[in-house]
Image 1 (spheres, rainbow, N blue to C red):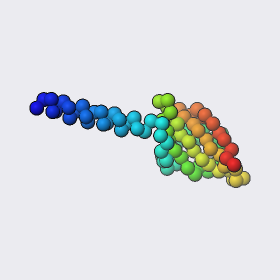
Image 2 (image 1 turned 120 degrees about the vertical axis):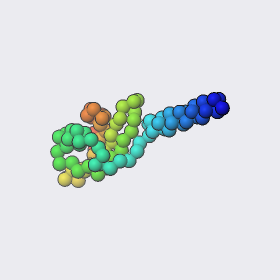
Image 3 (image 1 turned 30 degrees about the vertical axis):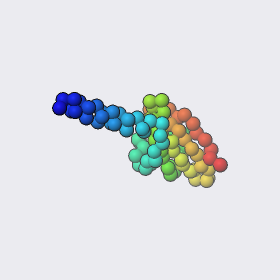
Length: 95
């Protein structure tokens, strides 16, 4: 009986750990409203007037990275990558 309980607990723990690791390295779409306000503020200060349209979240090398797409009033589209701590990784003008 003890072996069955221990085996069941091991399986549950292993499945939980595997499911948690599944998200690492995978991008996941999120609403822009779920992006932390400090990230939004940094982007808006860097690209004044940008309207953010899409957001994704990803864990890269143990760090959370937000990938956002936005458009300025003049029609230029940008892709921005920024860490959870606010470090801009990349700003790319989208063709």
